[in-house]
Image (cartoon, rainbow, N blue to C red; front, side):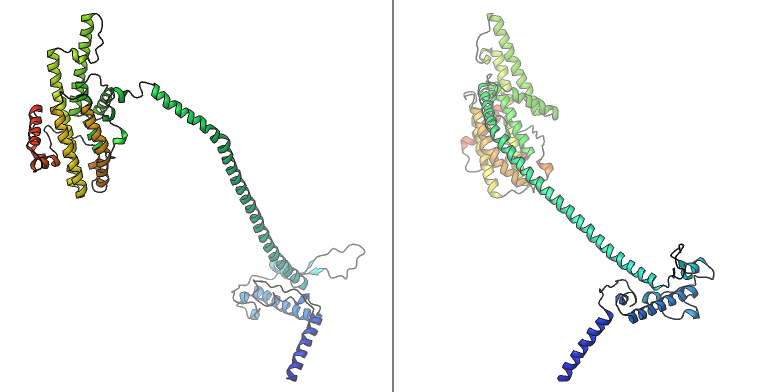
Amino acid sequence: MLFIIVAIIASKQVITLKLQILGIWPDIKCEYSTNALWNDLIHLSLSTSAKTEQLEKAVALTTAINQLLLYGSNSQYSNQLTGDQLIDGLFCTRTLSKGSLEEEIQFSPRDIFINRPGESKDINSTVDLRTPAVQIAASLLMFDLQGGCSEYRLAIIDEQQQAEKKMNSLLILFFILAIIATLTGYLLCLIPTRSIIFKIAQGTEKMKDINPASDVNERTGMGAASWKEEYSCDCQRLDKAHQKVLMALAGLCYSLDGEINIQHQINLIEITLQQHQSIDGIQILNNVNEVIRMREEARNNNYCTNGDQKQVIDITLSFDEAKLKQLSVIIRKLLEILIRVTFSSLSDEEDLITKYHIPHHHKKDHHAQHAVFLRKIQQEILIIARATKQHSKQLYSGWLVNHVSKVDRELTTLLVGKAPESELESQDLFYYQLSIPQSYSHFLESDSASIQDKNLFNKMLNILELKVDQQNT
């Protein structure tokens, strides 16, 4: 044990003595060195013998390199290895020739000082590549260049980071300013003007109450029995069929009551005919125009006969027997169109239900409502001469509110995904004969239908001279 302690103390003293002799220098290593000489920094020590040994190694390396360049790697004079992994692994051809410029630059010494008058000429002022001072300067230059590039890279990165921090700070500042500007605009502009906007809206609503033209359709027109967006069931095919029913209803109501204003429906019929010709639409428009002509003629005759136009609420009351007979024919035609388009519209809905296998619970409810509605329509038609002017409109407006906007919209939801889009698009349905829906034909054939129900249906067929389409029954 004592021997081990003495050995450790002796080794420490040797290391301390070596450090005193050689000195201490920084540990700098070149990452690209291929031999031990490039990382040997013993020339920075205080030991002269160590420096001499280093110079000998450097001279041996440069001599081996010079011989390699001078004679080439295949020459017998350059068989000495340099000790450098990269150089010894290369194949080199002879590049220097005697007296060439390369030889002069590499081996001929150069003057680095100019002797001025009075200076001693014994100073060695010539150096070449084999001079240790040149080699040491080259090594220091390489290390300084590597360190400078590293510092330059770090400086560039730091500059970019500082610029990025400034941009982030500016973005945060602009974001805060935008929020402040938005809140300021809301507090200073929107809140004070809110009361003004409300007053304008209230004033606009009051102007609608004052303006007679705003609710003319509700007061003197078809009212709830005219087409509105809330009646849409989101299916173009069904919506178009329902609109056609309401157009026929408007023509019939105007023929029965001259006080009703159906100018809006007439405009819709004309627009529809411009887009797509329809036999039913043409017949409705022709009959309505004929009624308008008859009433205008009666109004003019009434004015010419008495010298002053009488205040007649409905000019139809002044029709003579011939005009009343002609008017009854027109009413019968319009009744026939209304019944036919109503039955065909409901029949088309039930065909879609059967074709695309709509669930039974919806089909049952849908058919029941159709049957009840059609029975009420027939009762209305048979007593239309004694009915009030609003009765038929109320019947169809109830159908629009309770059935079209609810049950038919549910049907559209069930058809989407089952029926192709072409089936749900607008189609011009026209039947020369009466197409009875399945729901009503089943009702007439069932035990639930009374003799009065069957007589009611047959009486309607006889009055309007309708023929049943046997293919769709």
